[in-house]
Length: 208
Length: 208
DNA sequence: CACCATGCTGAGCAAGCGCTTAGTCAGCGT
DNA sequence: ACGCTGACTAAGCGCTTGCTCAGCATGGTG
Image (cartoon, rainbow over all chains, first blue to last red; front, side, top):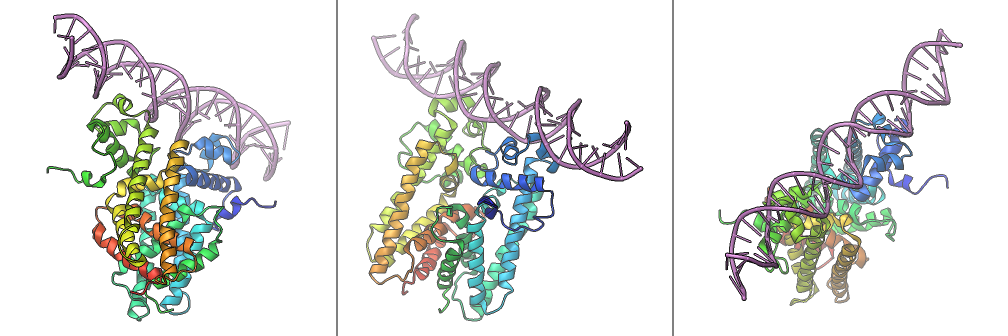
């Protein structure tokens, strides 16, 4: 095999190819382990061994274990926000955009479930300054989704009584995919995205 | 104040009143801490101190830190399954039952978000035997939801193309509430439940 | 009164943690 | 040949962890 199945779990993140290969190996090993066992249950020895180095080598590339988490979380959030913005800024009316947003958002959380878990379920382990950055990105994501629902409601394409609640439901569905989706899931990320897109449009009262 | 706000976070679990008061205090302290920081970031000293005892006292009531987690997780899952079964076995057609199920399921995950987080996000920290018990309960919950959707589809009340995917979406929405709901949320658990009930019925293609 | 079970504490142990240090070594410009 | 650099390791430091244990106060029972 030319590439392990694990390689697919790590999404194309901004600047992924620009850093030294050893640092990138550490990032991937850390993401795998954080996703599977959680940040606090992962030891620096786990990460270093999985990356094929001694524990001390980790500190040449990263200041601390928490710095690895911060890097993964910030890159993952940035990638998600970009994905959302591209869907919202695309062609078509609100319903068409929303369908594309949910398809992409859902498929990303299935495909990159490893990073997705770290992004969504290890927030509490982030150092305060990294958390501030990430919280801002999360707010931006929520705002993009809310704005799109509002636009759809204004255009008469959606019927929603509470925009914030509807937005929560939409993002919730996608985020939770990274919790339950596994290798053994029979649906491909793209299939799941299409089905969730359908469900969300109905949920928002769009005429199909 | 006669009762702290924390008291409301701990739901009425089976056998809650039957155990010694000190053990119950430990359970609550553990649930709070596991929910906020995660199992591995919580120390036995944290739990004991929050329960007003020395670390050694913990081991009079529980065999280990993991035994506390197992107890919380099993009780939480059992309570959820009971809630689901009661909604499914209630009066009315599939749509009416589904509405009740989502209302209760959602409200529980908002009200008991502390236990809900432990139940849904600390599964990986469970000892193997406790995990087996809990996994069986989770399967039962999923089956109840799937069966109800199937009944609704057969009765012509729902239009769903993939029952499993629809069931996933329904439970996902409820589970994820325990991740994002906080004290500062403006909606009450009951309000949220009603709104989510509405959204889910539309998602399932029910004529309203 | 003695007796002992119960619920608890203070002190502390072995193991494992994040991280540091001193030193090795291949590669490279001069 | 030389000194320098950047990536790496073996060893281990200081500290925290989950958990244990000897002993103490309390209160019901003979």
